[in-house]
Length: 85
Image 1 (cartoon, rainbow, N blue to C red):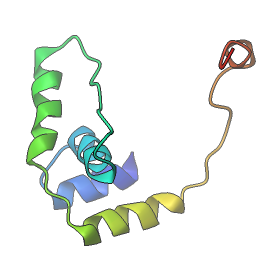
Image 2 (image 1 turned 90 degrees about the vertical axis):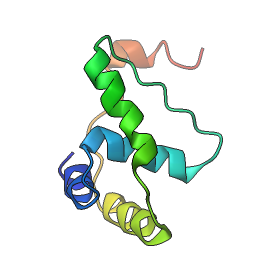
Image 3 (image 1 turned 120 degrees about the vertical axis):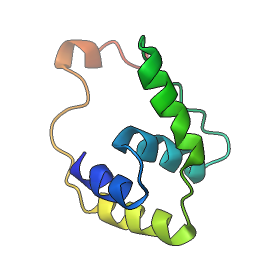
């Protein structure tokens, strides 16, 4: 979150907007589905369409994010057994 916050401030966006803009810029077939029940959050998420990421921005985000060490399991053991069956 700190990484996204840093880049978001540079783009005058929220971390959520930057994350969604990053997904949209990565692949044309990625369609983020914002899950919210609050209209204000949906409007915030839609603001991601106004965040312009240059190739240099994308490279910097990818480079910085690749340095983050992933820790812990994705799912608790019980739920892991239910995945992919």
